Length: 377
Image (tube, rainbow, N blue to C red; front, side, top):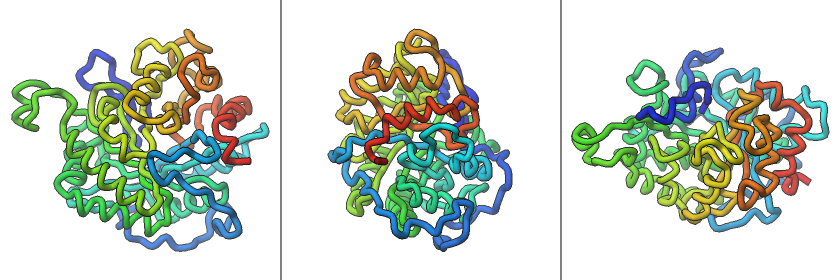
């Protein structure tokens, strides 16, 4: 979900995020089975895990409210550049009262890639050691530990930046039962709090070509029904265990899955993470506008705490200055103010690298803490 590149509105392909699974990563490791045991190992957290800590209950069903009124601040971490996101999350750079350690409520570890037969394996840069670091870090800091599964099989295929919707379809539709079994087993094995599905497709074709390839004539509905069926069954299986299901979507009505699909999943999914990294108050385009996004989610049947506002930590400014400006802090204040949406919304950040200096300013973490502090104090 790295948003370094974005296709224009007028393109048939509307990319809201560049591949978050780039294969030019540092420290590549061999692809490994997701069946590797989550063994206790020493990590850079300096912690033995969650012993002695009172763990928070995750949201166990989509109809539940957080008892403490919590609005989540979620950060993804990729399998690549682990030393950098571990340094960022350790937050020794923090000079203010708050930092990721007492503010972020969930980490989604984007370490796994789906397979055509429904299996789930480590992607090419993932390692057991780094995933164990995330597990221990989240336990130590009382955060939800989510396993993020993606469909990026590299830049060598014909799909934009490696996102392979046909690969995803073969897993969630053709091999649905095996795929769901594999995801549930993965949660059990790592004692995770849930699954984040990041299956992205950038296939926009019309007319005869679409009918020939997919049996449909309308754009952007490629395997929409099959995807909804998959989420319904997966959500049911996870909720039986008190686990979470979150889904990443593309921002408006283009590509797969997009915001127009989310009404199909309202009884199955706990949280929606839109990859709209140019969002703000009074944004230039309605799909980037905080009020438009939240109103659409509420109309679909979600509650305010279930629909995130997407942000990118690779930028310190974005959007226009029609609201409270273009800065990170300005957009957070837009969210908190109530002037640009019905209610403050949770925030999803790509990624936990917090690489732009603006994301290390004390005022930014004070604002983020306003969203999540009720679950941390």
